[in-house]
Image (tube, protein in one colour):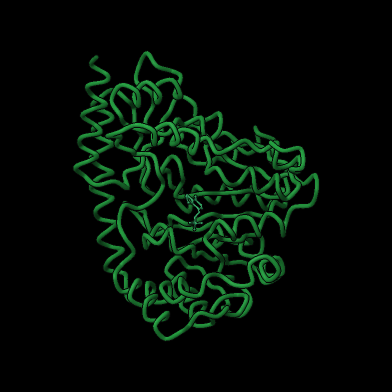
Length: 383
Ligand code: PMP
């Protein structure tokens, strides 16, 4: 990379997911179970609202924090998770949850500060900490615990010395969820060691067996937690780039301080789509959730049948099976499978060391393709 580029950027490796997909993109007839993106389009009513806003010429900036009506709708929506936030100063509408993650890191991290990041984890946390000048401390979670984060995991990894703790449940890449009871342990650790928590709840609406629970609702946690959520996953609106942050006014205000200089406001057209999505698209979300759930059950039982142990992921749209017996290198397995059978899965080690020996499989793909992909994996294992 050019010597003009800053050290922080030069030292950040390209995404392990992208690298793998560049390989796949060069081949024909590949079934990709790799991308973390719904195969559905956004509900029609949300798309119509976006079109309508354009027809009416609503093409200006909105207020920095996002349209007031949208913030009010978000405040009402998140009450279903027992989250209560003031639309005036505790909600910030952002360009995707991605922007919210970046703003929170920059708002909270001073040079040398430490952010504890449980692994395996979504790939954006570590780079955004680096760009903010901080350091990460990885906290491995364990397959035996179905990748839920435990008090002991935090202690063992030295997270007591961190300043900030990231949480991501339902989890990308494992599909793991955490109950309110499980979160109590994490909350206790955060309070004992005075950690600020960033809770990425973008998959909150995609929980299949029970309701989503947020750490921010536990005693003493609201004032030390910022929650990220958004429209990309639940409403299949990834390309509209709309998310939000919820949290105490001091930290959300600091995030808005950065946002007002670097983004001004989240995309206006997308804000109209999001408002309509909240108002009228519950049924469409329910239908997508039921479709994901059918696929989830199918892929889990197929992987287990094939001898690729797969714990019962209960959220998001990923499962995280183990490599089959005889293969412990997930990258080598993913490459060989791609080469021989044209099925693209993401090696688990792309999400941190504790993901090694696993594969991330997205079931945000049609049932017919999933069946073909699993049959191809079966042929590969037989060969
Ligand atoms: N957090 C997690 C855990 C994700 O999986 C993703 C998307 N892959 C994001 C945040 C970013 O979502 P958005 O499209 O809202 O920026």
